[in-house]
Image (cartoon, rainbow, N blue to C red):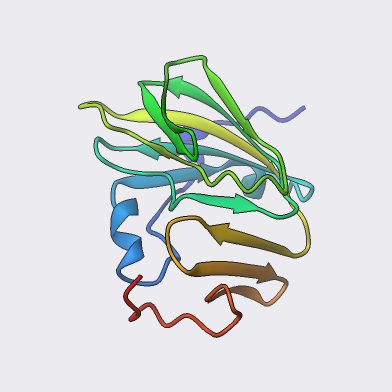
Length: 158
């Protein structure tokens, strides 16, 4: 079984969200473990949040499960139920199809890291709870749209 040396893996920064929604992800980066080792059925990433950063916009997936466990630091789970602190070793799970939009924030003054494990499907649609935006993903890539299906330019006022 190959051993993973995290120090040799690239760190991905930035966001694919259209402006201005990409701003909330400044200070978020990830180490794509599943990509580095060719895993196709599950996604496994270490997400790194600097103080004040968020993992994503609040969202939910139609067909993909997600599971997170905090590796270091403290985080806050933000979902339809409010804000829930997550300390090192604590977990949260998000079943596919559950429309409880969620994201993880770092409201502390130190870096936080968490492991994300999720289903990988050939196609997926995710919904953003707080804005009129969805993402559709397939073999061609990712495309953002409004909830009614019209393309999303990012210039709209949500």
